[in-house]
Amino acid sequence: MTKHVTLTQFIIEQQRELPGVSGTFTSLLNDVVTACKKISHLVNRGNLIGVLGSADSENVQGEVQKKLDIITNDIMVDALNWTGHLAGMASEEIDDIIPIPSQYPKGKYLALFDPLDGSSNIDVNLAVGTIFSILRCCEGVDPALEDFLRKGSEQVCAGFVLYGPSTMMVLTTGHGVNGFTLDQDIGEFILTHPNMTIPNDTHEFAINMSNQRFWEPPVRRYIDECLLGTEGVRGKDFNMRWIASMVAEVYRILTRGGVFMYPYDLRDPSRAGKLRIMYEANPMAFIIEQAGGACSTGRERILDIKPKGLHQRVPVILGSKNEVERIVGYHLEGDLQAKD
Ligand code: AHM
Ligand code: MG
Image (tube, rainbow, N blue to C red):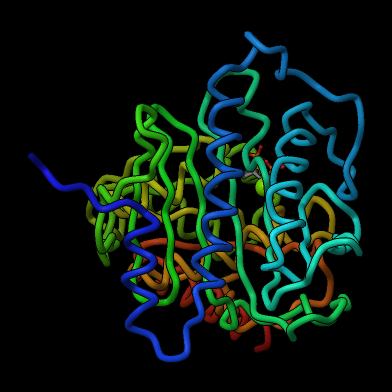
């Protein structure tokens, strides 16, 4: 009989090899896993249990919330706030940092999450996901906002769960990227995609083309060249995908390569792109880099950015290394020309 490795076993064995590890991190990860299994169940049940549709409320970003945005946020908070592993939390759906209730002990980690990414997909029965990022904090204290505003390079763990035809968890603790499939029969995530790596080259891009008129020249140039295919400078045809769910796009890129962009655009100069650095761009950048890919704003490595706000937005260009480097090169050329 095939012997399966569960996510818990995998993490315990990986952590055992690291000096000074107490087991707290493994327990924290189990808390996240428990929450994501509950979310997977709800997403799968859908309208059978009446969880689809709008909640008729807005989050701090002014986005209309789905019922599941609120329910999944509560599931994450309720699974993580009492176990004594965290000093605090932050969520896409909540304006300020989320403290640990005073009756519970405080731990040494911070968790940041987007409980239901791509939630515009939920009512049309397409893929959605949960994204999370774990930072280390001072033990036993009530963290301040500044404790959360750390560079992505300081993350100790990042992951996402994709609620697709299968429920999959993709995880990095800074030692490569591994993918686990939820076996619904036994309720365990099983290691099915060890050492996920992204090919350096690709002929597939993902971008919301309806925003084309708002893009900066380097992004226009890149996409124009892709669209010219064999007749242009690239000398090869490109394929396009847009799922409107970053978790699904990143999962595809981890599986077969590609480039994903939600770039800076000129729609609203106060918003540098759509995606948020703390719980979307940073965890995805950590995963992508650990799988051998690259992640940039076009002008700066995402993981090097010192965030200024919990819900700060950044342009995101990620995926196959050679392609991301090409787009970064176009930004550099464009900026140098603009200076002359
Ligand atoms: P959300 O966190 O409110 O769901 O927004 C993030 C999502 C990403 O998953 C996806 O890449 C993007 O928004 C799609 O945006 P658009 O609808 O503009 O194409
Ligand atoms: Mg999101």
